[in-house]
Amino acid sequence: MTRQRRRVYVTQIEGMAAIGLLRKYWVEDCDTPGMKRIVAEDEEGVTYETRCVDYRAAKKVILYLADASKYSRDVVAVDNMVEKDEVFDEGN
Image 1 (tube, rainbow, N blue to C red):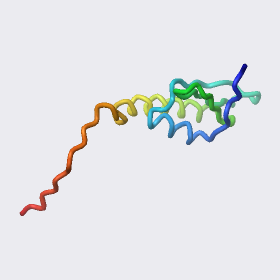
Image 2: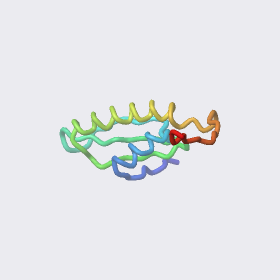
Image 3: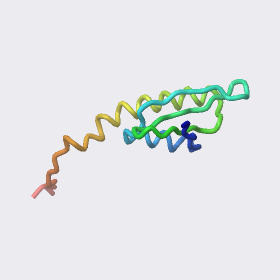
């Protein structure tokens, strides 16, 4: 059984990458020459796609997704996080 893709905005896919929810992502051709769509799959296997965008925009989105995915591994590390009370010294 083939799952249907969910149509989302580019910013939604970018946000998912920023918090580490994407497993993989790629670009697909559209029917219109020079237009591409971004396709992404999350950790649960759900597939998302954007509307068709100019190929130059698609390249920039893929670069952003690569950076956001890389940085999210460093920032979103809940398992290794240790909570500490912050102390602010007002110079007294």
